[in-house]
Structures are given as C-alpha cells and as structure tokens.
Length: 104
Image 1: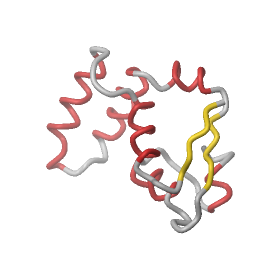
Image 2: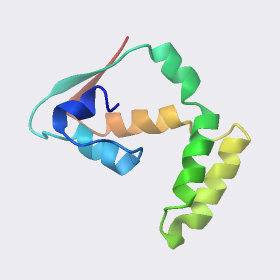
Image 3: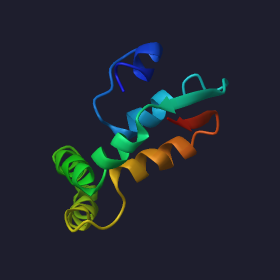
C-alpha cells in the first residue's frame, strides 16, 4: 500500500482501516481506478489468519468500549469464521463511490 497509492497522496499508512478509508476518499471529487495487482495472492494472504492478526494488534489500541466486540470478532476469525481482512478492505473500497476497483 505504501509503495503504491499512499505515496501519491502523501503520508505513510500503518494499517489503520479508518486511515485506509481516508486515503481512498482523497481527493473526494475525482474518480479514479484502484488496481490491485496479483489479486490471487491478496486473497490467500488476507484471509482469516490475517484478520485475526490485525484484530490482535487492534485490541491493544482500540477504545475500551470496543474491546468486547473486537474479542468476539477475534474469536470468530481464529475459528476461520466471520469476515476476512480482504472482505473488510472490499467493504471500505465499495463505500468510496469515486473508487473503481480493478483486479489484476
């Protein structure tokens, strides 16, 4: 992510999904294509294990009111259930109407 898209808008992305959404919405008035290269590798790498790892990291930083939900979501990911990290990325991308996802 930092080698591609983020370099064009400035800053460095550190894995926060809210920040990912912010990067996608900049600049909000222009439509553009976001090309994901080697989609098959992304699918394999961003499954339930990746989601569990991301949630473990997020658990250390989330607001205390969110801890219980993050723990529930983590338990589902560890069982191979619930959303994958890739599904979460796709939801964020789909929520940005100016972004057109291209899978390569």
